[in-house]
Length: 277
Image 1 (tube, rainbow, N blue to C red):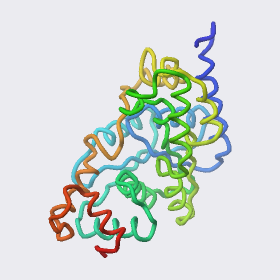
Image 2 (image 1 turned 90 degrees about the vertical axis):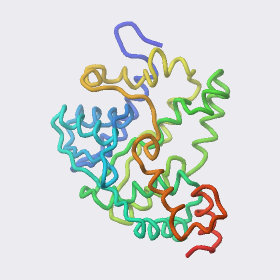
Image 3 (image 1 turned 60 degrees about the vertical axis):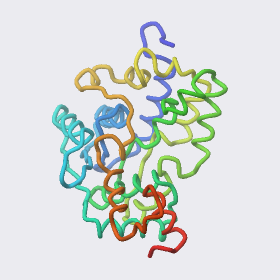
């Protein structure tokens, strides 16, 4: 829905929430950036508010992912300092990290373990005490395979899908990432996971949000900014060409795999059961 002479009502609500969530920042801020629309919208909000921003982006230590390259390009385009985060790929260190995340932090799901691992190293690298990230934004738009197949067709189904996601306190690793940040004396700000943001998307249709382009309501927030960068569709940061999921799969070739399991999840489950320590 677009008002005459203005941006859409939904876009206005989202922009207001982002502005409110970020307006209280008074010190230098670290922004975790990918090539995606969500984290870019956070950058543009921070720049509009005149904040002092440093962009961080992670990649495996032997390759540069498209997310990393895209973030670096965006930083160059807008003249924002960029600091790379190189994720270690030593298998013995990975074993130590996985044991820590499952045994000490209680993580269970594959996505939780692999995404939190990357965020853990990001937080270790970041120097600023305030960290902003776009975690959780995808859930609002119902653009996952499951969402598109079963939930995009009515407002009621859209609301049901989102309610299921956001009722999980650790959706998009919110709880564990916030905890890891606090342990290092840092504050995580996750605007797309705030209650006000969740409320802003209630009763919206799939078409209102994603037509003519995916996440159109976000693109409409900062058209002049988005025109200066290449816009990419949604992808999970641990998948795609990031190599993160594949890195964890290398555990299947280690002495941890006794030949019983077919995927790395079998190793995670064995750790949780105390069979690997």
